[in-house]
Image: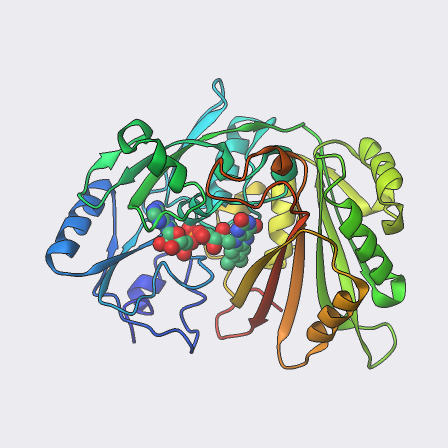
Length: 401
Ligand SMILES: Cc1cc2nc3c(=O)[nH]c(=O)nc-3n(C[C@H](O)[C@H](O)[C@H](O)COP(=O)(O)OP(=O)(O)OC[C@H]3O[C@@H](n4cnc5c(N)ncnc54)[C@H](O)[C@@H]3O)c2cc1C
């Protein structure tokens, strides 16, 4: 029994549990203390930790791929921000203050309760924390139109190593630059972000279309690589590849799934897709018109395995996603040739692991922002982002089949 696995900690209902913690290859040190903090507790914890020669790990949503928010090889104190979740939306000024322990699902929900025509460009998994997500960049389906979450962050409150609480002016432009893409944990504990909200239309269209190798997936993938970053910037078509059962009994095949959010209605979308990406064969029946918050629920459902038409309250569930998973990112400057795609399929056919690959198109607004504007250099010249992942099932997992 460890502190992180103790029944008291795991039963706190708002807590996103640590799905990476059981990884056998991670050298783990038990935290000396788990401090579930408000702002003054964080300041006291930083000062006390120094006096006792303990390092600090800061956890917001607990979704770090390497478990860096709750794993260390040295004695440490874990600062858990789960009680710092206040969100104040200012519709008139199109801004919001969000405390760093809130999840992006809670942020999206709060915005939708105040406005039907404002949104925010961040990721799709509702349980990801704003603390780690904004400080690492934060990409999602609005990225081609509005950039990253970090691009739309305009102020922050951080507690530094001396325990000082500083805003953007107090911390200075260099530190404010660094915490928007460079990771927050090296610099202090961020307690809140001020963000610019972005306009979204009242009608948004989503679709998910799957094609197997037998349905010409290879040709469609090749075409996707050429057009996805050049499409109208209101369209973001993500492409995922994984192994599935073939329609031919007893055989396996590779399936490419194309998932998209379009900032507009279906009547506008269909002609745009027919012109630029006819190979996909998108038809009206593949599409669902919804609100921006409806599109967020739809995309989150793809991760947690729900239907996608739930009420927005589902985004407030901080325990909906738990899976054993390892991911690595890559960035593409040019299309992967046919030979490379064949190699990728070979890897996905492997029976030992449950592998998947997700391609996220760049272009649009991402091309316009300088590579040094914030510490997120993958801008003009990059055509997509790749996420390689393997997942496996452990007791208590709720997703990932
Ligand atoms: C299932 C899943 C889906 C994902 N989907 C997306 C996606 O769609 N788009 C995307 O861009 N990314 C996505 N990610 C990646 C995710 O954005 C990053 O892993 C992010 O760092 C997680 O933030 P967190 O607060 O949940 O994690 P944590 O593990 O709590 O924190 C991550 C890192 O940030 C540090 N940190 C956290 N809070 C603070 C703070 N307040 N002050 C200082 N440092 C802090 C931690 O110490 C740690 O080093 C996904 C990850 C997972 C596991």
